[in-house]
Structures are given as structure tokens and as C-alpha cells.
Image 1 (spheres, rainbow, N blue to C red):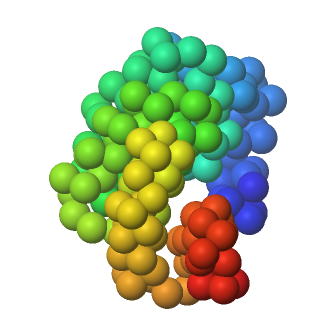
Image 2 (cartoon, rainbow, N blue to C red):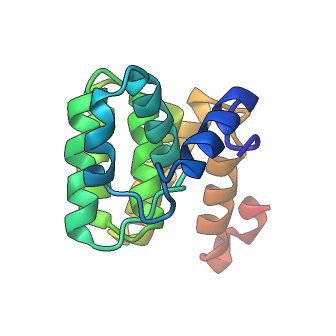
Length: 171
């Protein structure tokens, strides 16, 4: 959890709530979170749930669950940044909920540009749309926005390595 950006107090609260039978993972659903809205620490809980979502800690058992989480996120975090929405895109992509991932990626770009958004677009172009030319351009845009982020560099290397003529470039 620390590696995913959870603070020590976040982790303590998460385990406290879990001991009380709240925020049970990975099967947490928006319906499980609704009753928590009346708690005095509801805002804090929502922030923790958002962090659990964007770090792939919550499972999306089916498209209906993914759509429910998308509605929940839109209601409670509509003002999130482009990068935060791109992080949620990753969670849906990793769970193979590609329609939800596409909708969240659109929301991310509606909020502006982010390296993570361009990376997610590149992955979609490469893996779902089979468009290596556009995927390469998207990886390169992500690299321009955040040269320190290793994921776009890795993704571009993997993409280029698929073309035997570009193996030297891939390294």
C-alpha cells in the first residue's frame, strides 16, 4: 500500500474500517459505500475509496459493477484532475473493463493533458485498436510530458520490438 501512495494514516484507517467490516476488498461495490455517506468521516472515506479504485485494489467483477463505479466516481470526484482520471482508466483497463476504461479516458482528456492520460491512450491504441503508428505517437507525447515516468518508455520499447526492422530503436 505504501508503494501505491497510501500514507501510514491512510493504511491505519483502512485497517480500522476493515476490522469494523467496512471497505472489504477486492469485492467492494458502490452499494457497500453508500451507507457510509452518513458518517462524519464520509469525505475521508470517499478519498480512501478513490485511492483504492485508482490503485487497482477494487475488483470489477463485471461490466455492471464497473459502470456503477464509474457513476460513483463521476458523482464524488467529478473535479478530479486529468491525471487522476487517467489513473482510474488504468484500473478499468487492468480489469479488462475496456468500455469503462474508454469512457474514463475521455473524461481524463476533457480535463486536460497528462502523461498518464497519453500513456493510457497509447496502451489502448496498441492493444485494443491495433494502431501502432498512433500508439507510438501517444507514447512519445507521454514521454514528453513526463520524462521520468518509465512506463511510456517501456511501452514504446515493447511496441517497437514487435517490428523486426526497429529492434535497435527498441533498445
